[in-house]
Length: 349
Image 1 (cartoon, rainbow, N blue to C red):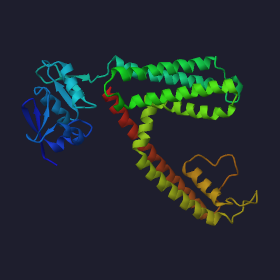
Image 2: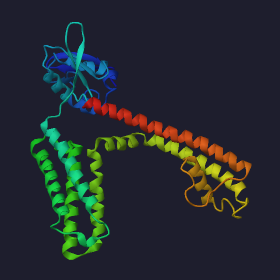
Image 3: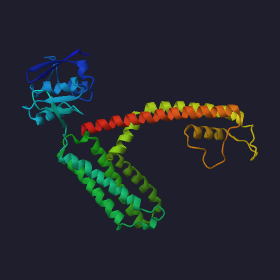
Image 4: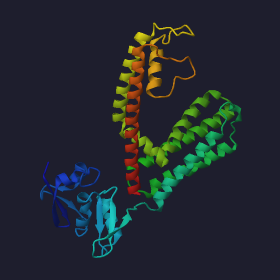
């Protein structure tokens, strides 16, 4: 890997440290695969047909923790266009106010009216679909009708959502590289399949198709999570913290299994005074007792599994301690991950 990158902007050459830009692989300069498209072997540099006067201000994204300072004599829109080209995501653009180097924060806002349309329409369509699903009676299949309010609401929301797909295909560039495009197509396909099956059920009274329609609606409703910010961030948090949470849960299960087996070995021969039966009859009873105690959720409404021996009560104390410890660590990781994603999302907006 080269220690220095030579960036050529219409004849103006800049030598920048490679380790500085490679720390941001989501940007154009930090992504070696994207950057290789601009490499010239005869000149040993990377050539861009961009404004060389703006590059020093853009480069502060890498040196000042994603901050870009725009002087008053430079239009802010020019800086924004350079940010789009170099793919500087989550950047903060500041405008200089006076010679004392104080700055007023200008959030980067590259979303136009069309982007707002592409966000709000799928969201409204998903809510309409969710409303119609909640109005259905699962125990009365004969209530389905092609001319019902539910049917027309689902049909209207599907047509509304289809308009966004057509709009993206006609007016947007590189539409097949947008994840939202494929999400909207999947939503339209699931909606059309649900409406078609509902019509077939009404005409042919083939109620066995109801299961397929229910599956389509479940997949369709799952897309609503993508358009709800909080639910989307929660899902992303679980994905990012999956490895850490899996390790903590695995260690917790090992402790639960170990202490449950130790307690079961001493408790299975003990007999309660009043009911005259063993407190833990099976290994499952012991595991249920340990799990309930570890997660502090109680023993349910069934027969209580209380420990009678000293070893069993010692295991109870250990399960309570380690259960609170591991549950706290899991919640801590989830909260930290969610807050980080939430701050990044707010900063981008």
